[in-house]
Amino acid sequence: MIEIGLTGWGDHDTLYEDLDRKSDKLKTYASHFPIVELDASYYAIQPERNIMKWINETPKRFQFIVKIHQALTLHADYKEYAETRSELFEQFKEMLEPLKEHNKLAMVLVQFPPWFDCNAQNINYILYVRKQLEEVPMCVEFRHQSWFDDRFKEQTLSFLTDHQIIHSVVDEPQVKEGSIPLVNRITNQVAFVRYHGRNRHGWTKKDMTDQEWRDVRYLYDYNEEELEDLAQKVKILNQKAKKVYVIFNNNSGGHAAQNAKTYQDILGIDYEGLAPQQLKLF
Image 1 (spheres, rainbow, N blue to C red):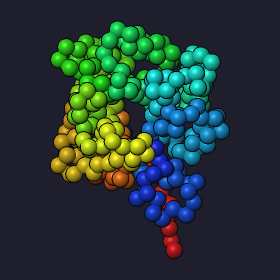
Image 2 (cartoon, rainbow, N blue to C red):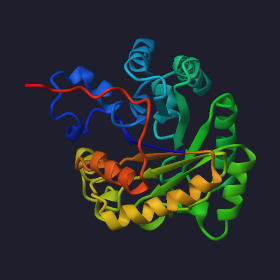
Image 3 (cartoon, rainbow, N blue to C red):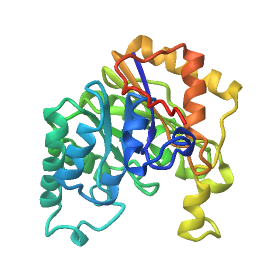
Image 4 (cartoon, rainbow, N blue to C red):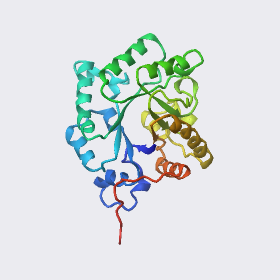
């Protein structure tokens, strides 16, 4: 089974052209896709009221891929958010509880920074994170090329398999050490695929402000030939895994939703159990 979705639900304007209330965006999103990547959790531990609101606004079969807090992947200093890293983990895990109880948690996405290279210290940190998240499905996405160079590729995949960690299969620009190749392999009964686009110029932050970088990093519109090729690759994963989750993250220019729809058509997928689409009569 292949489940397709997008990163977040707030910025996909083509889905909401007839929407009167901004507060209904998630309900409308859930009428198009069965999964979403929750990135708000990367910036802040979400209060229970938010989690319950999102649970109640989505149909029973809808699930969330929850991105772990930035301080737990070393993008930020945990001391800005809690007295200890363990305390911040406890807050994050408590946030997950309602999603687990309602069978809404697909996995936790642990995306490490570009400077997180393959070495013993970082391997031990991954094991620490795995121990903290031992009760939930956990996916790791690397951004440093060393994990998949010729020396370490097979060892990396074996390590992920041994610890039941889902490998994030990514399509992204190939720019020096700060990107990884598309490694179309599974390390778990569940597979995860993430499409970031192929904007080589925007992938690195050179000569750009933070805002300028955010505006262009995922600026890419996949053409149909590229989507056909990616679809063929995901079919291979689908033959080996029980379930494949696919997220389009190329939304700096608003292309993710339409790319995902075209990709879904290529694969011939028609989802059941989505939220009903609202009819606009006038």
